[in-house]
Image 1 (tube, one colour):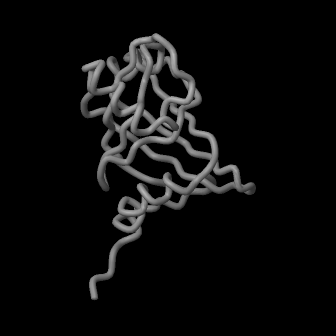
Image 2 (tube, one colour; image 1 turned 120 degrees about the vertical axis):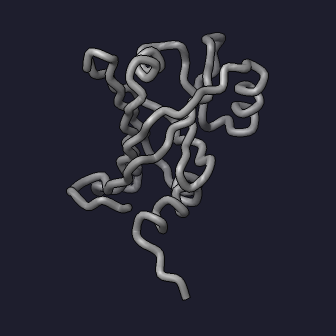
Length: 140
């Protein structure tokens, strides 16, 4: 029987975690000069054990990751207490094809709960590190 590290367990469970969890997501980004921005974001799409994707509109957070690919995503569970996760991310690529992005949004309406006419991108991030919401315990 293979024993998995906590990192392997968490990365394998991200898809299940986000499928079941209810709460609020917050994305923190910074531009190339270090000016920080935070914004409310829907739950990510878990692409695989190392990658998540977020639908991003053409706004400040999206501009920031173009100049600085590092970001952090915090998910605060609605269940009460201090439950949730912090994901430390590096942008890998983005999908700019409008029809592809719209198809993803149709398949996962929860990732873009407030539809509008703004340009949207499906931005893929590599998960570098996972931590509990509160405390210093790294789950990887």
